[in-house]
Amino acid sequence: QKEVEQDPGPLSVPEGAIVSLNCTYSNSAFQYFMWYRQYSRKGPELLMYTYSSGNKEDGRFTAQVDKSSKYISLFIRDSQPSDSATYLCAMSAGSNDYKLSFGAGTTVTVRA
Amino acid sequence: DGGITQSPKYLFRKEGQNVTLSCEQNLNHDAMYWYRQDPGQGLRLIYYSQIVNDFQKGDIAEGYSVSREKKESFPLTVTSAQKNPTAFYLCASNPGRGLAKNIQYFGAGTRLSVL
Image (cartoon, rainbow over all chains, first blue to last red; front, side):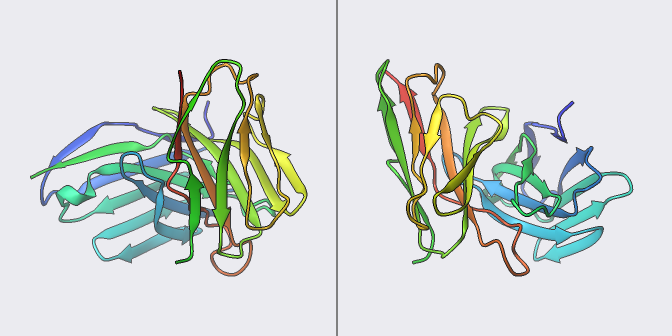
């Protein structure tokens, strides 16, 4: 079993819809959680960074962490065609080597 | 502009050949990482370095080698021992301090193909 599980999709939604992405994990030591967006043939760019449980909102993006369920989510409101990308979840236990464990990524297409 | 520069963008390797991928950062970050990305498998860690002249193997180090002679540079060599090198290679760095100490920042990647 992988340490971080993420449904690879693909996910296709109409413009303006809410996109819901999630990851589950098995390591209870994870306490730092990130979502990256990766456009085709580009490097990942950081979208959201959260520590421990709770919600964080940034514009159209909301990240949620439920440590009791070992489950994290990313919601994209009012989705746009420019949101079409692969979304990677990543997490860290905060150890001194700052290594991250990544999900496989979910490919999202927003149809105009 | 501050950032991570990977070169070349595309690279082709002949059988039996070693090739080197470049990664340079001007963010003054201590830690640097190399990942391999294959379709549907996410990012897998090849090597990482937290300080000059020191590096550690990641999960899939076989067939790869690295050096860290300068803080700014962390080149990756794909040796002929790596039998399936076709992949997208990503370099990342991490500040290792402050509120964002766990965040890794990525370069644009190098796509390696075998001729």
